[in-house]
Length: 550
Image (cartoon, rainbow, N blue to C red):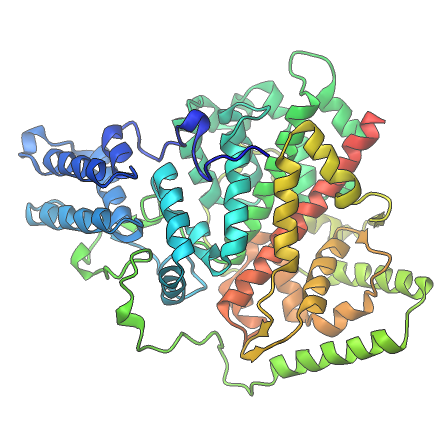
């Protein structure tokens, strides 16, 4: 595969950050790799912002500039930019300009900022990755900051996402971001919708399209049905759906374009799951990430997430992830079950008939595990204009008890069929996705909470296979009786909600499973959830495409 800078833009450019139209030269300079260019841009910005009132921008443009400076003062990986942005805000405040302050506590509603901060500061590899990301996007998004617990996965994730959005491919750039908006909107994920609305506009997208899917080209409107089915009931996808998109008329898709679109849809459906599953907060400089109401900017802490200035936290104990004072027996009980199951595996082999029966039983039971109906879920802005048929969801399927046909992996698998199809029609992408699947499936630190030297492969496989079981996907060599032994009901509810109805995920649900485990381990669980979900969707979509082609 041709090597490309991890996060560089097309033709060596870069994906423009938000607000490039207003003082674009400043922001281009601020994200430069050259310290001199950054200093020059910040001097110009200071002069423009702090000049006498008659020459100064006012209203919304000023507010956006100040919000972006606030973000830079807290999230920029370059110390010079953080410090000067903070100083500019302080000078502006002295002139009587109302200064924004951040809302929320760090990148996640569920994970203490201190833990993310410590992880970011202690890993030199992360600083390099952050710097590369910042020089391209002009900011570090909160998803990246939460994935910092798992650097090997994060690098693969960013490389894949960069290729899908910015490198040469069948679809034009603005189509890619619009498809991302459509996919995220299926789960009412305003965080991802807002990010890609900005990116869409900055690569020349037509603002009228953002008024609703009916204002987009017919070609994109035709993708709505595929988006809906893939997001909620991928087992219903047939070759007729594919045929409808590929039919020869002025709005038809090519096979290569469709593969690109399918990968983008599955990527952003899954990323919506991660966004809600880890309680990702709005970006500081975006709607919901800051406020101009008191208290003033002087009250916020400048111990920033990317600066290594973390001494203030070193004497503090990590925040407990446990909400109840119960004995530390949860982890030991799970480890004992894993040990017993391993012994049973060695002594007694279940027959194929028994395995088939246990799969069907687990599949039926997974339908009875309800997604959370907790009213405490994250507030979201209405993004329904970006998709059609807002009532369509996974919930309808379980309520009506529709039978999900079994998808046998030995008949159609990612490794033997899907990978080669993607790579043939969209070169290199199959390889990137496969690398990401392999990393997350095999990712282990051989720890469980406070215990070391633990083989967690059985537990990781149970989580992955349970998600695929919910989608009707069966591995003939797996004993599905293990799932009920290893995954308790609160964990199953969390998994099903994050995978099938992520917008209903709550902090209570996040706290209630694996109460003795670290936040890094719960993020690891979320990575397994999103990649297993993405692979499940891809299997159904690629099988339908294969059936169309044959």
